[in-house]
Image (cartoon, rainbow, N blue to C red; front, side):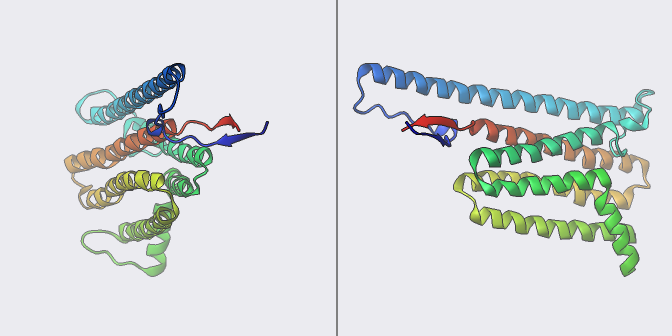
Length: 258
């Protein structure tokens, strides 16, 4: 007897046909349907609880950052959200790594190649955040092209914005191609990930630009650091939870017999 591997649809999309079955078969099918529904509900609760844990961690990091200014505690530089290799940034690295790995896993599990666009994008975000790629590239661009200061922004800031714009266009192109080639299930998830990624870009790029204009004012510098880096942490928590939900909705393939 030949065995083959079949991809299962999401848990909530598995109807059980009862027409033409005997009473024992109906009972078995009904029990299976109840188990699937219970599993889907349990998965939803698990994702919600993990999201709450991540948001609580984000809140603690933000509170520790603010504690530097309003309490005698948390005086170490590692508590500052914008400190390289600080607590906040390390947590952000872990989240981005989880997201990239989850989408890679999801692509293998579902045999949906379109999902590979997300590991590429979030993998770049991880490398960029860890090694300051956009800052170094912005510095090189500003020095080589002689970018003048404008609107209160220095040449370095304008160079970084140019690099952000280039990466934004590249990301949009990659996601658009994957969206055209992907399945309906991928497109459904891509719209949500795209919206969250756009929100992340607003914090990382838009708020960062405003931050550069008023960073010399202590109060505004503190508040915009929280808005920029804290906003990035919160959005990444939401993306992490969503990717976990996608994985749980697509359990591993099972062997079926002909």
